[in-house]
Structure formats: C-alpha cells, structure tokens
Amino acid sequence: MSQQDSPQADGSRAAEIPTESSPAVSTGRPEAPPLVSVIIPAYRCAEYIAQGVESVLAQSLNDFELIVVNDGSPDTSELEIALQPYRPQIQYLKQANGGPSAARNTGIRRARGKYVAFLDGDDYWAPNHLAKSVGLLEKSPGIVLVYCDCVLIKDGKPYNRVFLAQEQSSRVSFESLLLQSSTISTSCVVAVRQAILSVGGFDEGITRCEDFDLWLRVSFEGGRITYHPDPEVYHRMHDVSLSSDGLAMIKDRVRVYNKATTLPISREQRRIIRRMITKSESDGYTEQLKAALDREDYNAALASATRANEVERSWKLRMSILGLRTAPRLFRKLHMLRSSLLQRREYSPNALL
Image: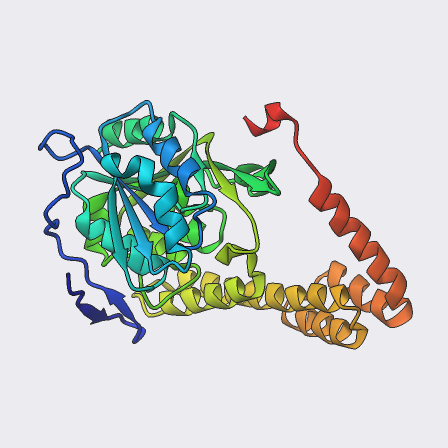
C-alpha cells in the first residue's frame, strides 16, 4: 500500500494514515473486528520475538488480532524461523526499513480493532496487561490512552521499575508530559485507534522519541490520558535498543520539544519547553562527561562538565568540575564505583510486582 506524506508545522513529514483499514489477513478468528489490534514492529529482535508473541497469545483478554511488521530487519531469516510456529495466529507483514514509526503506522493501517496496543519486538507482557488497560478504556469513554508501569530488564534480570525511578504525576496533561513527570513507554500503551489516526500517527521523520512526540500531540488535541500503577510490561535494556544511545535520545528529545513550539501553545507552555530544552542540553553534556570518563579523557570530561554547568548550574556539576581539576583519576574511580553500584542494584521480587 502506498503511503502519503503530509508536511507538519515544523516542516518535517509524518505519515498520513488513512482511516480505512486494509483487508484483514485471515487468522482463523471470527469475521467480526477484534476489540484490540496488537502491533509489534520487528527489527533485530529474532532472539526475543517468540517470548513477546507468546506473551500476547497468553493474554487473559483474548479478543485481539496480532500484527507483526518486519521493518526490513537484517535478521529476517532468523526472525521468520522464530515466528514460524505462530504464523496461523498472527498477521505477518514485511516492508523496507523505515524505522519504528513507519512499522507501527503500517500496523495501524492494517488494524481492525477499536483499540491498538503496541509491543516492541524485544519486550513482553504479563498476562493481564490488555485486560486491565482495556477495562479502564471501556469504563471511561473520555479516556483515549492508558499506560502502566514497566519492569526494566538488564542482562536477563529485573533491576528497576519505571514508576519507582520516576514518580508519575497524579493527572496526565500536556504540561506533565512536557515536564517528563508522565513517562509513557510505548510497550505499555493501549489506545483508541481513532485517537491515533486523528493526529496523523507516528512521525516517520523521527527515529527516537517518536512516541514522546505522539503522546504530546494526542494530549494537545484534547485526548485524555491515564495510567494504572501495575507493572504489566517487561522492557529490555540492551545495546541493540535505540534507547541505549543516551546522547542520541537527548538530541531527538530536544528536536521533539522544538517541534512542539510550532503548536499554538500558551506562554507558560512555551516557558516549560524552553526550560526542558535547557535541561536536555545539560543532560547531553553530562552524557558526554560520562563517556569521556569511561575512556579516561579527563580534558574532554572537564570541558563537558563545564558546558553542562554553564547551561544548567548545579552543585553536582560544580563538584565534578572541582574533582576533575584537582584529582581527576580519583574522581574517575569514584564515578566508576558509583556506576557499578547502581548497575548491580536489584530490587526484591516484592518491589517489582
């Protein structure tokens, strides 16, 4: 199916998603449309895709269709072998690589469900994820998007929860999203399909933070968003994941903030965006500082710490500058020790449930 692009207010181009669904591929389910369309974009995830698919098929709410979109993955042979046992139960689509936004938009076009749920190819769900989120949507007609807490997995082990690391605002709003006090992970989202269509879907010109951009647009257009606190999603953090590239994520976050300034926002909202761009730029220099310490480049580390402190002054950055000027090797040892302790920190099973 051809895809029309429409210019956005900032000059970028996002997919214009038709409201008509494509003809469905038969999966042995009744002809009536499913309640939920689950969309999995697949790229370099052959090792994990079976666990994700099985977690969908094991949902306590079983009125769904499952659409897997192979986004020109270089491990297609392995991916298709992993998917082979599930082919009667899924719709499998292939396309040239266009990034996660393009893959999800393809799934949205094919979807027939009232709701769409997103699951990244290397993540997986707990059995009641759909039931809990759809239950909230069905009880609250004004809500168009529900998300939940997420268990972070590193080296095969749970090590944190998103809501423990970032306390959520009691009410989700455009402002709380801008301030990052409402943190929505894509694999945690179940949304009204028409609400996604009405704002144009994912912006295919954005590779990272494309989900942040979409949630902002949904909220700005009046779509009400809520969450529940249960950790029903498991998200892997590893080198293949786009989110592992911290500096690139920060740059694209700034890009999304700049795009948001093209909306007809209030003076206060514009002030929040300027403040968050400043914070993001400071975070970027801090990432450069950490990378320089890792490779023992103390001059570059000091330069990054100085630039970060010029953008957004803090006592931590001032202490870093002092340490790098007076005892750089000792400062690096302390930094590496702290990083090691943070990486080894594991929560008890009760904290992750």
